[in-house]
Image (tube, rainbow over the protein chains, first blue to last red):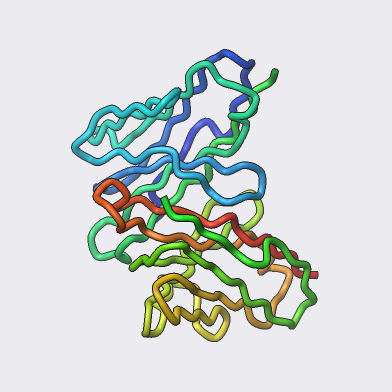
Length: 114
Length: 118
């Protein structure tokens, strides 16, 4: 079954504003990863948060993980036009699934207007 | 992180033909994967490319349609055989970082191959 599901599907904001994207998943995980994809290109790894971590920071990115609610959020502070992209969360496989397999949601399309 | 390259970056192909996509990594990695991303959709794992043995395919994907080679720890190919318009997608290879403790469990993706089948 599909794991990560992001919301909203699309988000449009002005430069300088913060952008928050959410991800929910269904089964237990070892870790959750966030990726960015510029239009039609490869995925860029942003951050990995393990199941025993609650919050992680990397530059303007802040990721939280609530394993009791099976949800994660990605916050981009002081957004820039260059942050315009699709953002995906991906969870690792639960037991019995392919080792190393990631389950991706459909992504949130973020548009940052100058 | 690893530098991952894919060839070709994009192609337009005719129905019934085959295309082989190459993935090259600048360091040796144990785990290598092939994903497909159909237009406007999420990524779906096609198979795990195993070095020295047959690839492990996910449900819905078969070797006859997507033969995979993995001759060494830095290189893999995916062939899309007997293509139809439904195969139009972005195909991405990924590797699991295993060169240090920080990279473990992290998957790094190539730039993707955009395929359009007419």
